[in-house]
Amino acid sequence: MLCITILTIIFIVMKENKNHICPVWVGRLMVNPLRRLGQHPDKIVGSYLEPGMKVMDFGCAMGYFSIPMARKVGEKGVVYCVDIQEKMLTQLMKRAKRKNVHPIIKPTLIPGNNGYTDLPDQLDFVLLFAVVHEVPDKKKLFDAISERMNEGGKVLFAEPSGRVNASQFKDSLGYAESSGLIRVAPLKIYRSHAMLLSKNGN
Ligand SMILES: C[S@@+](CC[C@H](N)C(=O)[O-])C[C@H]1O[C@@H](n2cnc3c(N)ncnc32)[C@H](O)[C@@H]1O
Image (cartoon, rainbow, N blue to C red):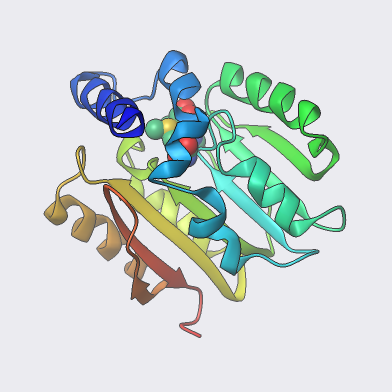
């Protein structure tokens, strides 16, 4: 019940947020452990990750997914955590140090829609969770991600259903496909539209 209340507060606030960028205080709510009751990070991303993988959590905020991802890829892997808000990345690294996974996490501050030149390449997996609707040029984002994926690499793309309607999600999927990402399967994630995509469809 508390989990539903927290998620509902997040969705209402985000819906009313005219700037469309998740504020830092909502970032704090998004790492509340109660969120696991509806959106458990290991259940959502765990099966796509293996030790040694090079992965990216794009729009990571304070690392609700990044830290479990770091545990899965282990010390031979790397999790690039990308965000446009420095405060999110500072808090993420504090949390990562407490959980002792900070050597695996590479925080990456980017200037937003203007440039993805600092994004890593040869990625095995990319998580786009509740971020694409905040990005003005979605096609440019999907192009940048697609060209940095390894063949067979997977992208888990999810949007909050309280904020993004089915038609908007479909439009974003169209951008992903025109960037060379292929639909693998729709995913069932609490209060989300979600699709698994692949660089070459495998
Ligand atoms: C709603 S939060 C989602 C956080 C996280 N993915 C989760 O599910 O817990 C969206 C995050 O994306 C970031 N963001 C928004 N636009 C971005 C952009 N153009 N590039 C990178 N990050 C962006 C925001 O700063 C915020 O931290």
